[in-house]
Length: 74
Image (cartoon, rainbow, N blue to C red):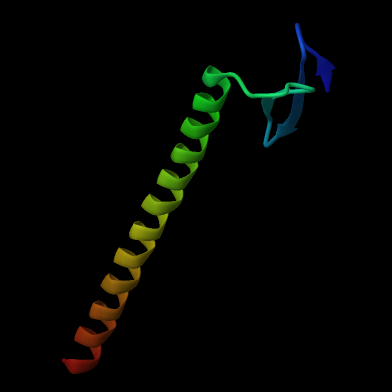
């Protein structure tokens, strides 16, 4: 963690060889619109990634079930 310019702190950690950086507003009575927009974009992207992974998993399971059913029926 390090102090940034103004009233925010920068948290960072290394994960799988990559540096992950997150700016956090400290002591702000209200969040600035650009900061809130950045958080919304981050949450939207995370939800989108999970949704795509879920759809892929459902398709994969459906394909496997169909393949096993075809294998048993022949």
